[in-house]
Length: 193
Image (cartoon, rainbow, N blue to C red; front, side, top):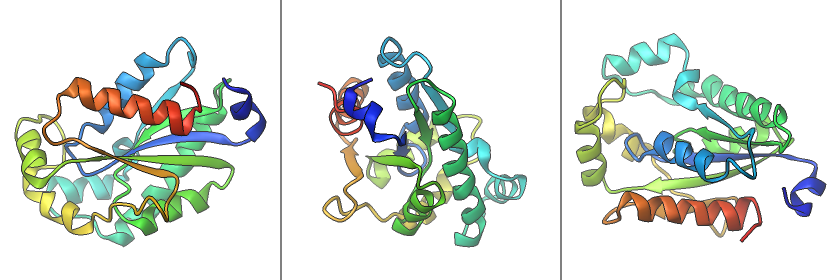
């Protein structure tokens, strides 16, 4: 842990954001592996696991969620990821959460002001995401629901939302994506080189 990290007094939460099919959970696993020596207690929260049964049922039936469906879930994402960070010696956690709209990110920030959230958007084109989702098994988000996610997607203006970064995925290998995300985490979240 860096001196800056120790003295800030806030919990740090890395939010891997983006539409379904961008590899948020997979990248989270890679981050935990990458930083296991420095942050052995680092915890990952799968945001999808925090959806209430009604949301899962709705998505399973192919019905996109609306804002009202998401409010309590987003609050729970903020609270649970903050609890996870608070439970570690390093006060750091990772959560996968789509965080598609600015107002969703604002709600997460305001729900737990004791945490410093850093949103890393994994961004891929519709074509790339559809290709990924067609090969995905065992998840309630199906390819035919992607239109609603792209309709809701508000990529952050990084001049306005300075706690956000965008990592483009198209035409990159998994290794390149992983390397890009690790670099963002090191330089923008952990302040290490």
